[in-house]
Image (tube, rainbow, N blue to C red; front, side, top):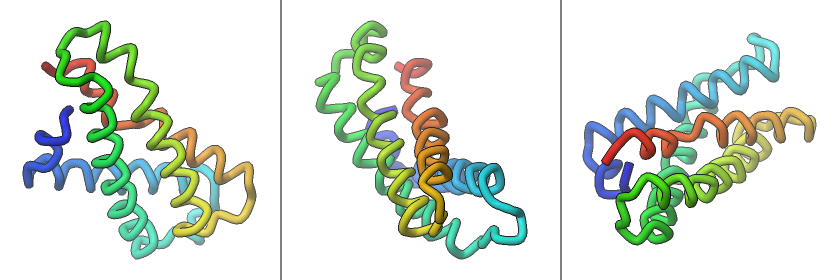
Length: 123
């Protein structure tokens, strides 16, 4: 999905819900359920949504409006990497996951569950 699409109110809300679900899944996979905080996860989801918008902008610039499937697939690792780095940072500083292993796993989960993967299906 392009940045213009994600900035529409309905898609922005969907992106925020997706970000919350991904961070919740990462936390519940890595930590005990008793440590789960809805407030911290929601704040992390807002940050992750912002990172997703930055990743969408970078992806739009990289593909330069070329709608071919081969171009979209060629540049797909870019937003996934941006999302993984953002997920790692959010796990470390926002969600305060203590172990490096947990931070890396959270980053990988965020990168692999990147909403930009849906761009392959769109256009």
